[in-house]
Image (tube, rainbow, N blue to C red; front, side, top):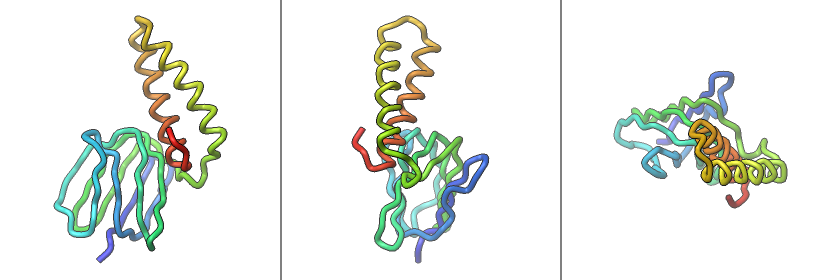
Length: 136
């Protein structure tokens, strides 16, 4: 029996289809979900969700949120999400380079709000590159 997987952002549903397996970027590490998984609720980190359906993997960049697993249904509620197929890898790498430079500079400074913002931007940029198939 396959999983029913839904990835929902405030302005759109990014994925709503059956799947064989899901790998979530939980705040405690990568978490694999198969049909029959025990019920759970977990916080999600900014990162890449991977869904396997019909023996093909699909990557989706997630910008934090929560996932609920119950009765072979996985519901993912996120702040924002973007399928890897819709991300231009070259553009995403350029944004990652800028975000990484800002993050490195903020780590050496004393401006705490700047460090928090730079960290969020870096994680988002890294997730987009990974979802698009790049190494980050």
